[in-house]
Length: 447
Ligand code: UD1
Ligand code: CA
Image 1 (cartoon, rainbow, N blue to C red):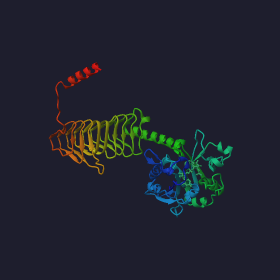
Image 2: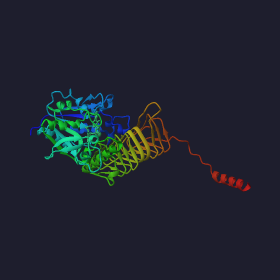
Image 3: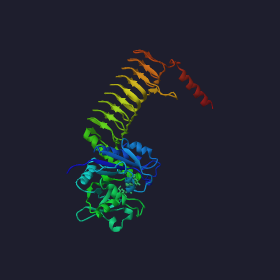
């Protein structure tokens, strides 16, 4: 079989009213990325010649999420067949296999998309994706002929009891011969329970023309369609399971994997340990031999080889924890580099800062980076020692090897190897406390 060129139409318009959301359904996220982006990214693996994303009016964000794919507008959400028709001009003259994908069906793998396109390249006019869900559901039902080929699809709302009892359900995704697609779509009507133009009708239309149809089956979890928040959570669970498998394969130990939340792009080296209840938002890279202890929250951060993070640490965007560095409990790091071996072990805020190699940041240290108008930077030299409960009022620098006494508020630059102490001199009155106690005792016995 000779593979022909491949194009794809991603349907991302439509109401999605069961989400009860002011935002388009396909912009809801799983594993830190919109559903439409998941579909487009999987699709990119097949290197299609043309990709068209169908969005509704005012869905600029959908068009933006679809970039670099071309976005076209479906002026009114009149059904899935009507949506594909919006791509007619963009696909003019295209004669290969056209994948029709739903942006609300984000878990389909590239192999499955490929299998559908191969069925069309092998001679089918329409190849559709089927599944056999275990429980009750309202998917369309696939009517098969004796040879196991699709004859028609009955939408749930239109199906009679016999059709509803059919075991194979329509996952929605199809591949259609580009030479037939628009002629078939032109014949789809809207005389049905929802008054919509159903893409699913092209199966019966193709059969009526004596054309070949094919069925590709996958497990239900891969074909899960998201129409509600509950289904969104189910899709998320499937995606999290996949991402955890990928982490294990990369060499990560997770003693309680089901409590760890990963993003689509979380990257791990080998011999990494991730403790329970840790959250990875997008943009996190973790190198080899890193120990991330329980209850950490990371986003847009890099953790270099041999570093230790947590328990209870928060790395915000731009945090870069250097090789062998340590970020301990209740430490927040944002837009700050900690060079090799630097340590902030307890209760600190390090924002808009650069911390030199082997510097030590004491408990309770705060970089005061914000003056109410702008952010300012703090520079801490290599080997510097910042005593506990220090406020570093940025912009400010502490030179290499300098020592800042505990409790200081540092607002002027400190030279390398200097000692800075900024606090009131300690006073002591001998016996003062004992005298106070005596006085108080006399007063209360006299009452
Ligand atoms: C669809 C299928 C159904 C299948 C199910 C699988 C049809 C008619 N029905 O039903 O057989 O079992 O998917 O999940 O195809 N969309 C548009 N424009 C529209 C309508 C929808 O772009 O006018 C998009 C939606 O954004 C969505 C996709 O098409 O991504 C599917 O539409 P949806 O309304 O969710 O179809 P289902 O009722 O789930
Ligand atoms: Ca759907």
